[in-house]
Image (cartoon, rainbow, N blue to C red; front, side, top):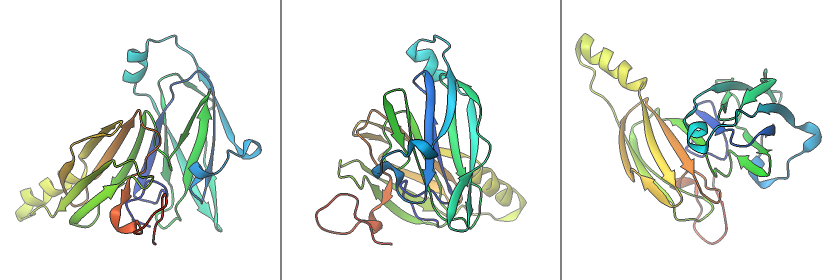
Amino acid sequence: MNVLDSRILGPTNCFIQKITEPGEVVFETRKAAAGFLPLAEHLAHRVKVKDLKLSKAKMRARGGTHHIAVHSQKGAVQIGDTPGEVELGDALLFHNANRDGSGFAVSGRMGKQVFSSAELRDQAVFTHAFGLPGRYEWADANGSGVEGVIIVENDPAEGKRGAERAIERMSEGALVHIVGDKVKPKELRIATGQTVFFAVEDTDGITITDKTLLKKGKGKGKIAY
């Protein structure tokens, strides 16, 4: 699965959530779009959060990241090791551990705040690696009007230096910053193989979805796979 759609995390995607509330993080993974279903408390994973008494600015500047691998086995999704305790301001990074694994979604809460890969709200990041050239127009499937364009171009790789440069470009990430309904940049040009980081702040819960997946007509989040 290699579609541009934050609601279903495939092998070319990651979901990152910064921890902004002390106490405990409770989360689960599902094959379906978990953001549209209640959190199943009895199935959830729990991580303690150490409160460092940081200012909001210092907390947001912290960069500690804990990687959590999600495995697809016999039609179900299971997570690997989870940290027993994290610090306020750290982030949880979820990635698909199977190259041919089916898609999954993450949902949870920290304190009174909820988070979901299916509905990106605040201090959340969705990443997508673009493996094919082309023009990708994306929008929020929930109808907020947030949208943008990613133009993916083949990087000429003539000779040894050209090939080295192409490899370097593939290792460089590109950023799309979304705050509320503002998107910067609205149009981004990258090289084939590069990863785009969609960083989201202060929204009501948006998706990053290829417009070709959206059906015409009324209704939230209608897609055609």
